Image (cartoon, rainbow, N blue to C red; front, side, top):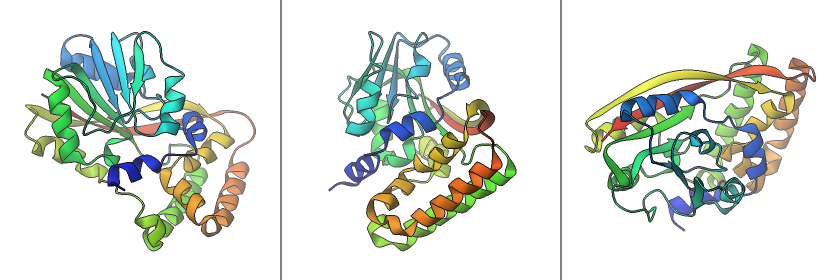
Amino acid sequence: MSNKQNNADRFSGFADIYENARPKVPRYPVDVICRYLGETPRLVVDMGCGTGLSSEVWQGVSERIIGIEPSDDMRGIAEKKSNAAMSFIKAFSDNTGLTDNCADAVVCSQSFHWMEPRSTLKEVDRILKKGGVFATIDCDWPPVAKWQAEKSYEWIYGRVKEIEAEVPEVRDSFVRYPKDKHLENIIGSGYFTYARELLFSSSESCTRERFCNIVLSQGSTQTILKKCPELIEKELAEFHAEIDACFDSEPFEIEFCYRMRVGIK
């Protein structure tokens, strides 16, 4: 099985958790991309769109939005959001099936690190118009909340990463490309006349359940739960108990910190 199929399969079986726990893309990247374009886009391609959380922000801005998603589970939720302006297709990032020079913007939100960068950027160059914008958008984990909750999140996710590195069945089930190389890969591709990194943040309402589910929305956690749950179940129960102790039943604000890398063709 190819690396890209393995990476797609990694996101099977928890689309509902992902949809309800992950942040939606805020308005700021849309405004930046429109500013760099000098106009509102006619077509935005959301590459690795997951459940469509990153596609919805373009409604009412772009004439058309096409989400690209190889995971059937993730795309199944996205397709329920389809309308006259927004549609979703099954494809990989290196072979979208779209026509040459069709897109004003191509966006990868929380997804470019699952794509082989060289072949993906070649496809981005093929489908992106001259003067078009390519952007990767990633948020840092955990979101800003109470420090006790953040520390607990870092502890459980640190344990997840230890298991992922130590257990061959988990370690060999995917290929992840470093996020901190995104800008370097964009510049090194030679396809873009200008590139830079931007930082921003966005607040959202949260609950105890959602904060816990952010960890469960991670492919790393889910892979361990599928392949060797006994290695993480006890720690997850401890994490849930700690988060329950941090917050009462009322909603609270959290803040996601983002890193956006942009290339102008």
